[in-house]
Amino acid sequence: MSDDTLTVLKGTLEFLTLRTLAGGGEMHGFQILEWLHRATREELQVEEGALYPALHRMEKRGWLAARWATSERGRRAKYYRLTAAGRRALAQEEERWARYVTAVARISRPQEA
Image (cartoon, rainbow, N blue to C red; front, top):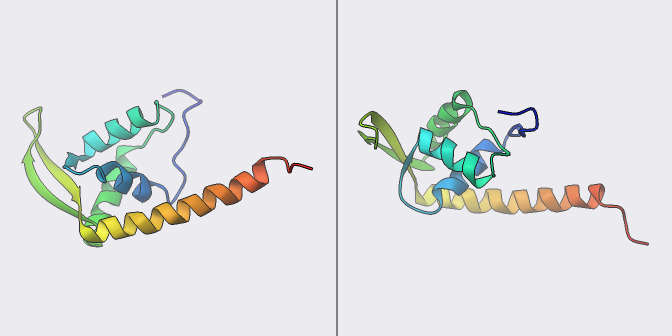
């Protein structure tokens, strides 16, 4: 990890995880971490110590369903997938993030005269 790697802002990890799983299928935690790293062109580095508690919180809320299976490396892994409640939560988070990005852009771009 370089000094230029962006830190995931508090409150974004759940959104990023829901968005990652929205494509369908299942992923275990390490796959989610790898996907986020690749999808952001290595700009975001998510720590395992942050992801796994977030996965458990989302599972407890009913946003994710999980099952135990053997990973591609022959290890026991918990695979997560989005539930209907998770899709609804994602839609709400996408709307909230769109508003947030628009608001920050208003401040960060000079106003045109």
